[in-house]
Image (cartoon, rainbow, N blue to C red):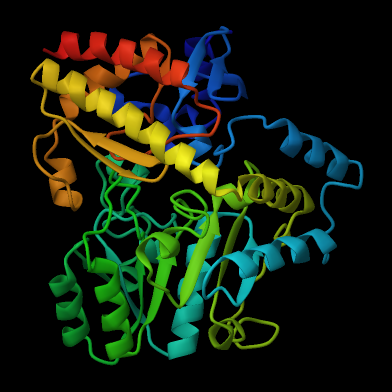
Length: 425
């Protein structure tokens, strides 16, 4: 069957035909392509069409797809069994590797998804502070747990629904929403809820209203406000961890949170998540403390093996220089082409993570991201997809460069993009 036939068949037994909403391609008025395999910088659909891929399984394919060394180690691990629900040496090795390479990560707990990581970190912050309210930011997405589906980004934005049915008023009332890159909005919430706010959770580089970097002083200001009001600062680095730099956004912006959440790259393409931080906070987690958290598949040996192998291969300064330079080359080329055809076009980048918007204004928050021309994005996306370039099927998702992308790949993308811009013009 081709992609269209598979999508129609999937709709009969999977809600919307997909297992995660953004995959439905609704926001680009298209049907999804069904992927059969991936290798290096490419994905291949069931009809055999090749695409240069900038989704990268939404971030973890930083080495490129199907890295032979990672695949080899996973195959060895499979011979020992798939899952034990018991402690293993490999989870200790990965935990040690993480705590040795990430500032302020003194202890870490493995989970199976980013949603589990953020949900657990918030519960821990509440248990540690004995407070109930939290602050998040409009347009930031931290998974689909109830308390975080308030003014969420990512798939929730793509669907045009800022919060979800099924989230009760009782849960939502404890989630306070501030404006990204706006410290005054955070301070006002602290002042209006003195002694009640357990934590501030933030994507240090927002990746779910497309890629929106923090303005100078924003993250430092959050650190100062949390210190002033006795709240826990949580960096959600599920997307940025080991992506924007080896030690994540902390390394780039020189700000240490109290807790961080991790995912994607630390699983090397396998399902994984983690949360950790200061020892005095982490020791409140069961079995040491009163904050309960558990997971049968947490620390799964296949995920731990894939993640540790990926991180060891990734840990070279030249890798991050290559990611940065490749991304700059692509974005400079796109901006030059957009200018040539008089198309308003704004780009963002932190390391190998990037975004673009069809607007001539700087984008610093959700409101500005939503003012970009979505119709132009849809036309651009459809043209690029039809000509062999696989971009995120949403104007509110970041893009990801990999070490497998070559200059020839990027030149091909720019050739296609010129045709797309010419069509838009």
